[in-house]
Image 1: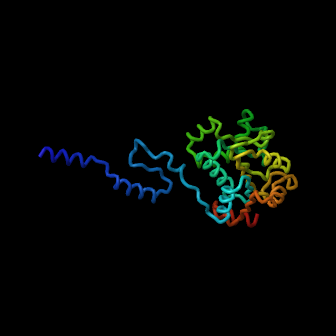
Image 2 (image 1 turned 120 degrees about the vertical axis):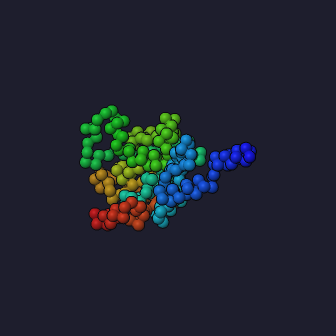
Image 3 (image 1 turned 180 degrees about the vertical axis):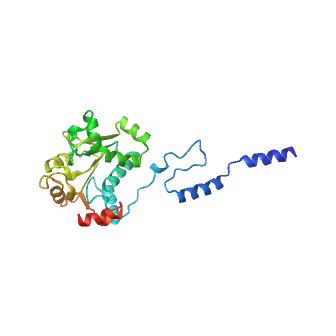
Length: 254
């Protein structure tokens, strides 16, 4: 009798994995993206950071394929088409697979109506708001702890355009964001930083430059590089916008 009750107690205390898997499936169906775990002592902290990125439009599909098959890709299109996000996601994927030894993200610190000189702090702090979109894209692909560790080790570097001159970027995945705010000379300088075993993705919207239209070099550069077979120029449009539907509607009239 004692043996039977002991066995009963043991069975009652056992972890029923099938039951918890069913519960986990229910919770995730109700709350997509929830990192739920049946064991509170070991939650699935990084569940949302390991998701596979999939294209949500034909244009995004072409862009992802171009990044996989070319060392230099120019992605042009309006706001909300996922240009920066997909480029950063591919960069993180390449780093974690060991295909590159570092990620270099660069962006022009161009003032859009505000003056950088009036921002508080040292130069790094003044530049932080301009580089924030790159941090946002990274934190969506990596946990904050992992991102901090990668940056501390120099595996991920975020730098303004002005700090790129004179460098050769070997074994790196380079993302140049907001390229419409670069002059022709700046873009030529950036493109020639490409080294061995490296991939570079340049993203921008020629219609949304904060420079005078004649100063932005993205349109001219992309038209010339479109003639080079080994370089991919991917043009996205309103149909590829994955933000709120109103974004596409606004861009049609603005």
